[in-house]
Image (cartoon, rainbow, N blue to C red; front, side):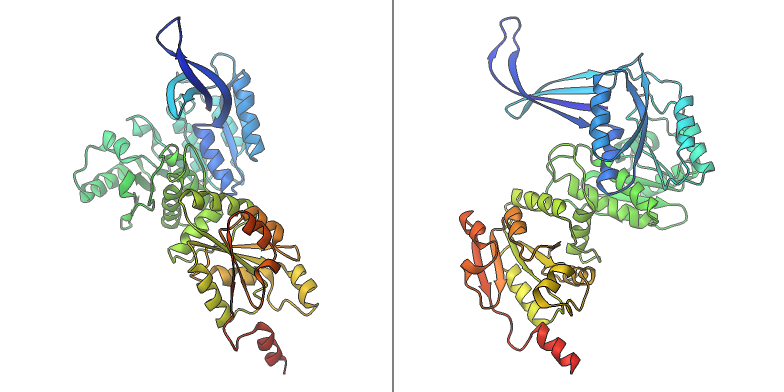
Length: 453
């Protein structure tokens, strides 16, 4: 399904009818429906293949182009008797004026899709079935059978009130309203668990994940205690597509060998992150990792440059103050820890940029670094004061600092602010540059010299 947005200005009423005239100045096409599940998987770094039905039209070309650019392999069944499902929204001044839907949601023969699914199961870690009730899963029972026969977990985003057709699936992910439409209204958590277990037995499922909006999630597995996961979102801006993020994260984690409980916990964190974004969106491994790190759950704040820029942008949207520092951090000691804690006290988020091994050798000689870049990043990411850690390969982080443009640039030692790499750009942007003193008596070089004595 293709979500098409038309943005424009309006200042008059049509003489032909009492409707506003919109002068369209921007068009934005986005993957919708099951395509958004695929985008969420690809965003997590999961190798993703998307099977589905599209029309023989320009919308299908536009959709496949967007998905292919995101690294998703598209295996589309093209039909000339139905259009690619397209939802066109006309928006002006932040308001949606009208939505125009092009679709034919009648059930279709699923034999070809079942055959295609069977052909691509070798090597698959998980299968997600989701069609938003648009007819592509008309033979969903056969799809579940071929997955189970191949030993591949199959997760279903159920629609409608006939859950019998999902018999034998590994897991269903209804929201509470969808679940209660089938199992009956639940007045307590105990009743929700009881009816959920009954549904698992009736449909021969392995598990059931019920998403509960502001109440979080409930994971029920056969013969295991219920797992209630509280909501992770502090702010909720837009719940559009959150269910896609949940099932995608769950599937990606399962495919990588995680347990259902661990996978559900990650999906819950991902849902809490995505509802803080505007519109249909996805989350990255770096965002989940940082969220785990902030909760003291063993996550690491290791990010790539693109992830860092995205998270800094979102952090600024919450009016958080960004602090940045850099260094080799070859042998971490108490002086470093105190320095980083003081740096973090200057704002809300602390970024630590770390010289990679080659740049350390250029700066300090062939005998350095003592610890490889991977180890240095992991140790720094484990510190409570550090939010994001990113490596860089240049002799100085000036270009990286210019891209991030922190509110406060911090450096430790006997520097003049104007001599610090990147300081000029930060100051010209209205930011601050601060020089902090290292704790006396602590030095990486001194530790290394002592070890070599």
